[in-house]
Image (tube, rainbow, N blue to C red; front, top):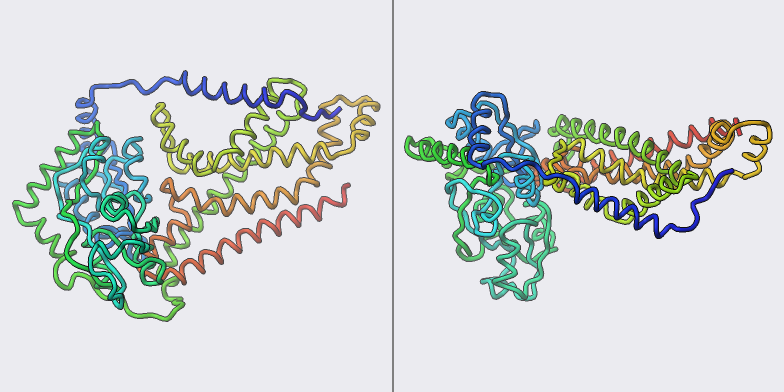
Length: 498
């Protein structure tokens, strides 16, 4: 007979949680090795070409780093890092797109080797990462709408909404120096400036070079007063990589001595360096046409993530469902614990735990593996309940009749119960897979270049948020409707067998 999971559920959940904590507590951290030796060995591998220098960057911060129409990364940081790596004897360099707020955690987890994204050198960051020598003078500045004549100083921001980028120096600086300001925290540089142009914030506090570059390209904003601070930009490295940091410092010193550094700064920050963008209509198809190669690649990555996560979700869901229906108590407890823990915690927390947390226990997963595993694990907890509910909805008389005909319990489940349950679980499965498709945008937080992340990089170059977000929304609408159509077609075809 089909058994429902009853009784001792609380004990099962507690046992599952306790097992998880014991497992984590018992895991052995990576063996510590002398930091200097590890750094020297790493630099040697980079110079021999056996390893690639992985550079994490948020390519939404022109003129330091952004993307061109073909998706290639360009900007002052991109060119300078390549030049420094070449002078340091490092043969291979690759850039990874990631949100600015994730760069320091990625360095701590050794997911990347260098952080290059207009990062200010400060004492708090220096506690957990190392910095190169100063490669460009920065400093915060305040920007308002061009027609705004009410803000003349920092005091005028009291009670007003001020846009800042998450994870940047601006957040803490505004809190300390104007606590009466209402912070509007956004993910990208472009979103900060757009919030002022659209009236969602009264001012932006951000790096002066980036703000001046935006004004030169788009207009509509003005800088108020002089620079608020005098911080400097530096490249960030993991604490263990002292040899790589020293190699970058030596190369930077050489470039400043022979004049090549000066030529590069003039190219990106000199007079006339910011080419003006042509004014366009409210909706600009040219933005999509020019960036189609980049968007198409992002769409393929999104489909890849969705399909692999869907398969993993079905695997976890079926396994969890059978576990919850099992007559073996420990298996039933594990099934209950899986659903309780995974469904009871936010997906983003699980994603960050797997990608940034597990490396501290010695387990480092590639971004795609971490993203797909997280998404499949999360969706699988919902599929578990869908599977359990569908099986239990089949009348008990059916399995009792099958057993009376001499069929074993497993055979009765396989040939009588599960086929009927599968038909009943199709509609809720379709809904769950639609949710999975929409949640797939969140894997962009762990540097997977899927459709949403590509859209953000396109906007950072074109500043055409309306056109890009409308088009991306349309693509997701088509994807979710294809899933709905497929599940409906399967349901209709299988209905004849019941």
